[in-house]
Amino acid sequence: MIFLLPIEIKDREIFSKVFLSYKLLENGHKIIIGSQRDIPQNISKISNCFWFDKNTFISKINKNFDMKYVNKNYIGMLDEEGPLAFFNSTSREIRYPKAISKFYDYFFVWGKEDQKKIKYLNKRISILGHPKYDLLKKPYVHLWDSKVKLIKKKYNDFVLFNSSFKSRPSKANYRKSIITLRDNLPNKKNLKKSLKILDLVFKNEEKNYKETIKLLKELAGIYKSTNFIFRPHPNESINVVKKKFGKIPKNLKIIYQGSVTPWIISSKVVMHSGCTTALEAAVLKKKIICFIPFGNLDRYKIYSKIGKFFNKKNLCIRKFGDFLNTERPNLNLKFTDSIIINSKNNNFFYKNFLKFLIKNNLHKLESKFFISEVETSEIKKSIYNLKQKIKSYISKFKDILIKTPLIYLLDQKYIYTKESREKKIKVLKQSEITKILSQIKKISSSKLNFKVNKISENVFIVKNSSK
Image: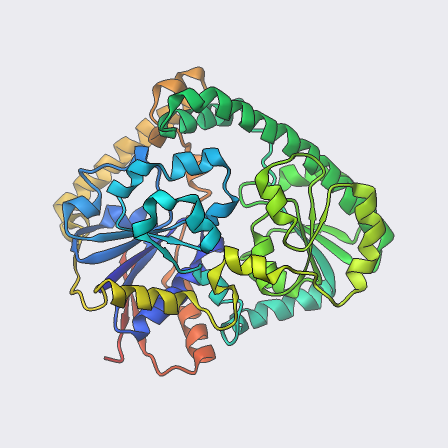
C-alpha cells in the first residue's frame, strides 16, 4: 500500500513522519512524504492509498477534490496538536463536529482520555498513541545523541522553559479567530460565548507571560551557575520575545533551534505554563515544573497531575532549589499512560498501527498513483505556471484585504496571509529525508535498503529497494 504522510511544520513533524515511513518500508509499503500543501497539488489519480491527515476543519474540505471522493482511498486522522484530552470544549466542537465522520474513515487518538472526549465517533476510533513518543525510547532515542551532545557541551546543566503562550493577536488576527469560530462552530449561538472565553484566555495568558518573565529573571539571578533557556512557541517572533524580556541575566537565554526533543533530553528540569511538551518530558522521566498563576481552565488542572504545579511565583522560587537538586522526577506515570498509550517502554505507535492495518485488511491493498500532468506535460506546465502567477497577484490583493474589516466577507480558507502560510514548511529536501532514514537504519541495525526519489517540489516517494 502507498501511504501519504504530509508535513505541515517541519521541526515538529519530520522526525516522527520519517520514522513511521521507515517502519512501513520494513513491511513492504511505499511512502509519499512531503509538504501538506504540495502533495495534493502535484499528485493525481491515486487509488487504494492511505492519507495520514493531521486534522482539517470541515469548512475547508471540498468534496469535488478530496481524494476520498475522487478515487477509492482511505483517510485517517491523527491530530498533531493533540492530545484531545487537553482541548477545551470550543476547540473540540470546531475540530471534531459530528459531521466529520462523513469525511474520515478512521480516527487515531493518543490515549484513553482522548477516546472519552469523542465517544460519538467510537466505532472509528483506534487508540494508537503518537509516533513521536516512539522516538523517546530505546533504541530510537539514540537518534538524538549527536544533537544532545552538542547542546550539553554548550549549555551544561540547564533548565528549559517551553513557551505555549497565546499572546493577544493584532486586530487582523483577532478577526481571523472570529471567522474560524464563525465558519466551524456547529451551533452558531455559541459564537458570542466562545469569543468571551477566548478574550479571557488572552487576558490570562498576557498576565501569565509577564509573571513567567519575572520568575525566570529572578531564578537566573539566584542560580547563577545554572543556565535557563526560554524556547519561544513556533508562532512567536524571537525578536518580539526578546523585547518582552528586556534586559536579562547572562545565564538566561532565548533560543529556538530545531526539534524540541533533544533540548528536553538535554535539560535538567523542564518548565512550562501549559505546554504539551510536558508529555514528552514525562515519557523521558524528567523533572517537570508547571507555572500558571492566572486562569482556571480544565487543561491547567490536567497539568497539575504532570510534575510539580505552582500558581504562586514566590512559592515556586522558594521550592525551586530543592526540586532542582533532587533526583526524583515526581511524576504520575499512571496518568501519563492514560493520556499517551505508547508512553510505556513496551508500547510503540508503529506496532499498534501495523496491527490496525491487518485488523482492517489494509495491509495487502495494491495502491496506484500518477504524477500530476502539470509535472509531465510542458504545455500544461506552462499553463500551470501562468495560473500560479495570476494566483500570486490575487493573493497580494487578498493580503491587503485581510488587514481591513472586509475580511469578514471571506471564507476561512482565504483568510491566511502569505506570511502566515510561510510559517508552515517552506522547503523539504531529499537529503533531509535520506539522512534521517540512514540514522534510523544504523540505530535499528536493519538490513533495509531504501530509495528516495523526488516527485515534485517538496514531495518525495520512498521505496524499499531490498525487495
